[in-house]
Length: 125
Length: 123
Length: 360
Image 1 (cartoon, each protein chain N blue to C red):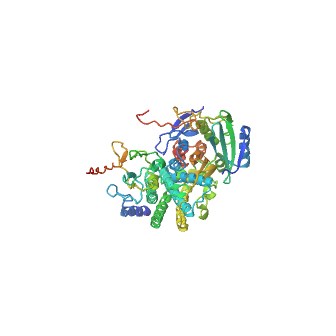
Image 2: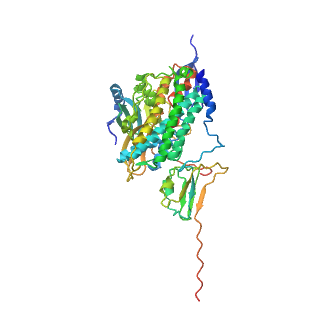
């Protein structure tokens, strides 16, 4: 059971981050879930051991504004979401271009639906 | 200076603080999970529960030919198969398996029961 | 006349690092001006396995994210599912989880103390710290079956119990480790050469630590009093402990925090054994979970967050792990500018990097 969840839209991402900074919250992390057609991105904030979440539901292919100018620590997790789910972020402070976690021969966006686990046995097809 | 001397004398008198392996080998603890040895072929009913529950997909059970195969290089020695076996026929050894030159699976099969001799023809 | 800058790559292979991490250091003479991290050398894609393994098999996958905090990963995962399914874990299981959790914290901090001594060349102290750690490893093998991946957590409680004769052996181990720790503390905290390498190196002030998201001993050494054990999971509410905080924010303060946490963990083990009630160690589990949950616990390196989403079948639809070293890399990038090149290994080790946790 998730407590303290507020739904936002794309315009609300930067606004909610600035709001949280003024109120003294710290950024914990952000989680991405693939629903098939859309993506759910959660932003988790914490103050005095109480968590507050913002949930953003977007269709695939939309560019999301990055909050790394407000919270520098969000830079790493947004690069990870970009690698694993193929989401584009605008205004990232430090952009690894999809190569933070994945290496050169890796499949694109492996965590998104449609990426399958392929087992290759030695000596067989 | 005196403290250092006291320390040196104490360390000389105390003896080694590590075990002198391989001359002194520690006995393995009871219930330690070393490696999965295998099954008891007569008791096993080949239900396939161990295959379904294994997190590493290391066991393959063939009910038709009564064969139980285990890949010891995929097994993570978690002990789930030993716990959920309905007949409790699996054994787990206490020490880790030694290295081998050739990678082989563990294959165990139920011995075929001989057919009883045909009854003598009716006179 | 402007002096030129040069870029030196630190890592990914380096004798002092336990796991591969690359830092590109922009240097001017002997001073570091900027540091850019690069990770991705041990990415295994473990979160993807949640789609094919069912929720009971996933415990063993999640445990293998990290070797040093393995019990805590399984604990966090089981705690999340128990919250989703509203299961009440029996009291004896809660105390046993505290005991194994604090044994993991002890062995993790002893491992780190050894690596720290190795990083400034003090190899005999490194060997002594790891000898003390071996006693903890022996007790883990005696109580749970193996040294590192103890695999005792299941959904609804635990698989194994600690009977009375093993309890006495564990308490003897706690006394021996405390004696050895008292001897090593004299060297780690009071020796002149060790202090010269640690005091004033890699300072992280309190307000920057809060804003940049420092967790665990890194945050607590800068004055932030946050410890996820205050969330009262397992049996921490019934035990007597307080958050260990230091105020200086340099490498010496982080060492003091971890040394004090070792004593605190040994004390918590003794308290838990004294207060543990008799009873069952697991409740039966019926049905499948549905919904989503966020849980956090305190691993040896800091705050670990799990987001789980289930849809009523035996596979969970999403397992998302945010490990403490992932949150401690931005503080590292902040601490490095301004230090000398020879201090870089000590600073990198002082955040206790566990890159296999970071990349999963």
